[in-house]
Length: 324
Length: 101
Image 1 (tube, chains in turn yellow, blue):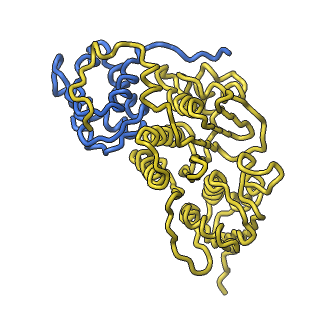
Image 2 (cartoon, chains in turn purple, red):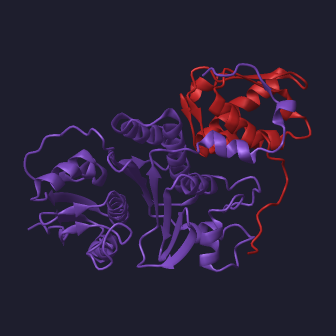
Image 3 (cartoon, one colour):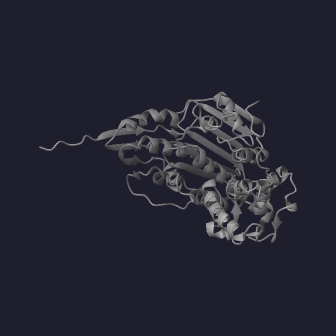
């Protein structure tokens, strides 16, 4: 008689809200508390039947989709996961998860019949390959196009949004050392004129990344986290690096938006009132959230022009203006 | 050098590093004092990370050879010009980041 390989069965039930503290009540069942449910996957080597029960779900935050997807991919690295999702009973939540490409980004099939509804005004979740050099522009353009389609953004606002998405995604590809692909998710609320983008990875976190720079190696984690959004600060020894997060923070702060960066248990929040750090329940890797004001008065060109003090026209030849 | 070969939206350091390899070939082919033509026709946008990785890094590497004054950008829209100016205005070799504060 042949021996059978044991199949591990993991069942996770999500109660009511799929959120993280940033997007929901402090005491809500959140993604951070679901990490414990994923723990058996981390030690599994063979086949795992994973059942994700969302039947009671009534609210989903976009950033929680990104965080959950990355946590799931990271936990399942060493095993062969066969996942099924029990879909939400609430038809609006069920539709929303389809629109957001929730199932595709998790790599799991929902039970029962479904058809893809129109996604006007929403953007899908996307996995950003760690190894594909074209992944950053492709993801950023795709997400931006979807927002522009639904929200009547000006060209200036759309370009500023696209550039900020590029920088956040590029940061994960360049610095996170995430063992799994990052996941980017975005949603828009036309009536509130707001856009939210979240990028999650399972990497070493911002303080550890900045600590690779010898200038910051012996600094406390909170200091490194705070420094990461300043210009010329990066996890490399190249003094010309470190513009990405600075640029995103500046653009959001000048346009009544908000940047939230959370690595482990440290959260940085930057808005028009300044930059604040707080201690929160730890999450895996890094979660970056950008809440954008659609009516953007300060664009990328304005920001960069204000920082370009050297008269470069003296030594660089630009032949054709307004083309492209 | 035709930048559209890398796409209509140029962003990310990984893609910028690939484009820089092409730029190095173009610089070599132009000779010691020759102008290097960089054509942005059909390119919609460029990110500062891409621009720094492609142009900024090479300009800093070839500071002695004066590459910065030999680049000639054509068909770039206003935003691309702003990003290029921002990146190429950064002087090389400064140690700006400090751990103080």
